Length: 333
Image (cartoon, rainbow, N blue to C red; front, side):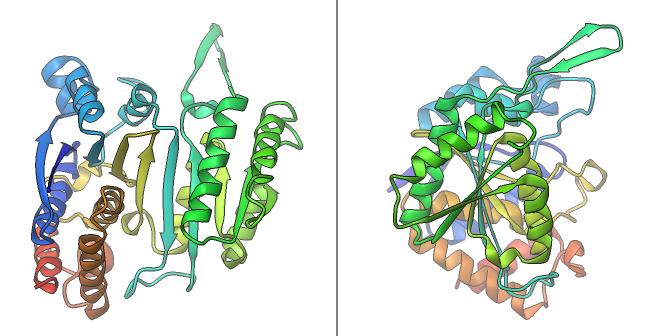
């Protein structure tokens, strides 16, 4: 079977890590017909739009996309392509598995977490305006519909993958109405999954516990802004954003992306580590029922990382982006 998949290389180091991952996917034996589209700075310079309608239509048609990092200007410029895609395609769930990869040094061993982040509302949606000069208001929108939907997603993921516990993260001690609605929605959903334990943590306390005893957590479900922060914190437990993957999922559409930035300072130098995008591509393969290929890639990646002979600069090696990809390809032979 040949899969038609939208390919969004992004900008900065995006095209380099995307090329590397496409090479590995080809070596895995999966038949993919790529449909490439530009986004971000490249698209804005060409079309005046950072998120062209043709790209959105392609993802909507193909149901699956692989996306490299895209630069989001800070303070000024066009709005986030990531947020725009999530809104346009109703990609309501951000899924970030976090676990230790073999051969990667980190402060903790045995980390095995899943971060489930609501993706469409909360402060992160960027609904803000200037009331008067010098005074800006940002709107925190929490709805029962979105909170219930992400809660069921978290519990269903836990059930499907044999997870034992779901923890909701909140600040309802202060934001009693908005975060109160979120945890109330999760509580009601939890009653339908009696085989899965459920508890709650205030976000600041949860962050402290994560960096002290991460082993006590399993699946975490969070509103959008807390999810953005906590998912990066958890990546730090296992080596950083370069060694975790992510998926943005809707009812029938999945966009699988690298979670790190576009690193324009090293763009074009073949210095970037493609592992994060590769792990996202592995999630994509499982999503399209290509589990055997996903397993082959993970076995090969583990072998390369464990051997430590071929490593990119961020892992204290000297290999280029494509040299690392070629090593993973050889390990699959």
